[in-house]
Length: 222
Image 1: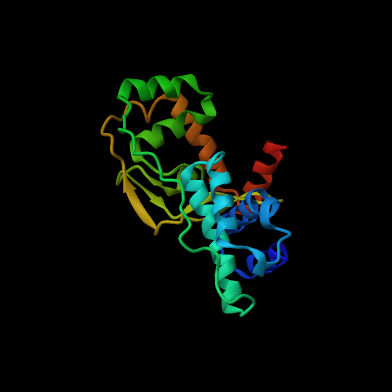
Image 2: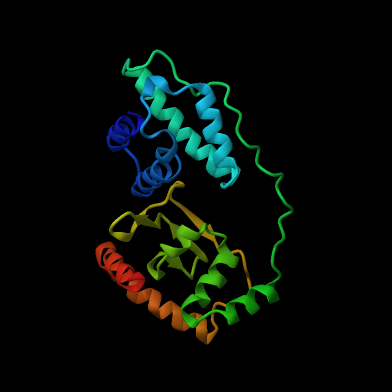
């Protein structure tokens, strides 16, 4: 059965924790309900096309592409294992992504208004996101020990990742380790009382081990 083989394939892969969770969810939620109980040899290209079309009605094109990639990888592995002569994932048409919209950058006043509208604990997050431009997971994994105020840059070498069944933990950034400069020369925002209070909380979290940070996050979520 497809599901039986796909689960064995999934558990044999070497992935990041976040990728492992993503693959499991994509197969369980979007693939197994349709072809999970089918024999590998019985799945035809038309079945895969129907699967993709159905996913395209409820998922974004990028998500459909990711799910299709998992399905294709499973069938390619089955071909290598000589369980089937060829993969049914051939000439399958996928939804095209919508044209990219024009990027609208917030003004300084808009950023400050947004920062003032959120609870104190998120104030520094908004200012840092606007001033440095990190990805969300990298922002969530940034602690004060990674910030060099003298040289005006931050060290980016980890991110917050979600691990199925255990909450969240700190893991390496998907991009290479790097430093990112402060893009704003206006110091007033980063020295406001709200940002400084948030920075003090970041200092405390920096002294925590990844394990304790995970426990704190899990307790917060529960």
